[in-house]
Length: 240
Length: 270
Image 1: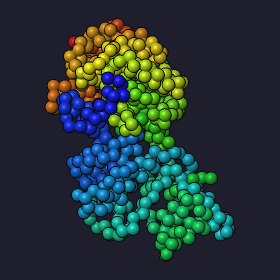
Image 2: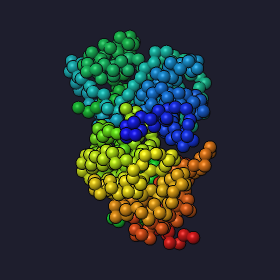
Image 3: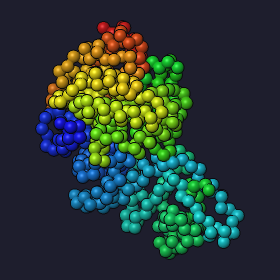
Image 4: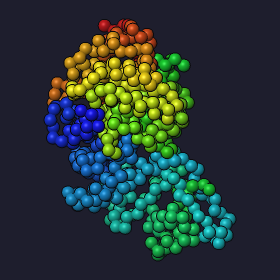
């Protein structure tokens, strides 16, 4: 048998029904490695769904979308959408958004290093000059806004292993979260719809004037000065 | 510095590892976990590297695959090697990738001459990309395959001769494979081409819940049988950089260091 033909047959055996008992050892190792990676990458989903539930859902995802990149910390880019489509979890509609935040945390944690724009960097600019600025998000900045679900509260409480508050007393409305890494650790804070839209517009290359218009479109009452100040103090922009 | 015994380095042990000073101590990490653009993980590794030698152990190049290693993956390994300047770089006699899918395991193959040519080419490509020699490790076996044209020891020896690569001898894998496939671990060690030996791995194993197989689980201390095989090997080789490998049920850092001490005291073994 040629080398490629052997490997093709071996892959089919890995995916097929248990045959030789030793094949089950390889199959278990491969599947366990994938599920362990998902468990490490989606800790808030694990906490909300419970570990046993998580591992059984993860096994279904592994079969549907196996890893393509050996950097397993990147694995699971399609997992949030999978959870969103997963019928048995239909009564937990927030899982998809929470999973997206877990994935964004890993992206932030592993993103390139660069100096963040100083909070007072824009002080002294005339309004015209400020409006013409094109600010670039820091490589480790990630943000997500959900129009109807409190994903930021659910996610941050689930990430904090010591939080005894559980899921009670949560206002059931739309929320956003901003993740940044101004020093080494990833930090996060809540984000309004307008602030998220402002940052998205900056990421698209718009001027600050254009980004302000996008923020007001997303959230008509948006306090633009407060939004910009929050983004600057959190280190959401890269130094020029 | 002459490398003596090292230990696997896990994130929960970074701070203790950075503070610890011991003669010849070194640390090994899985290269893939540090293939990041930046951030705290790489910063930690650089801090460790500033006070200890580091070995990069790759698990995903798929050198025994039927094509060349994934170009992007090899590129990432090369930049990590440039950044960390590791004391050792190693990979496996195994494959783990096919048609774009990554299988997180070290999969077996029939050791044919065609496979030897393919793998030698892949090792040469890797050594060129990294600008240095790598060591190739013998994996654990669970399944007796048909179609071998080479013994594992001869296959490894031939790879070393053809490519100039070094060898990483995992004594626990020798023990586990001999148990699972019915071989002779001592005979394997006696036949091993130690002139090419760069590093030894020692790890724990565990019995499979469903079969008589032993699993190379890296979740327990090194067994007494494996320590005795190690002593037998050292009688032939003299001191070799030796890793206490632990990837699961990772104990306190002090326990790993205590196990590392045993590697320097094999003569006192019962």
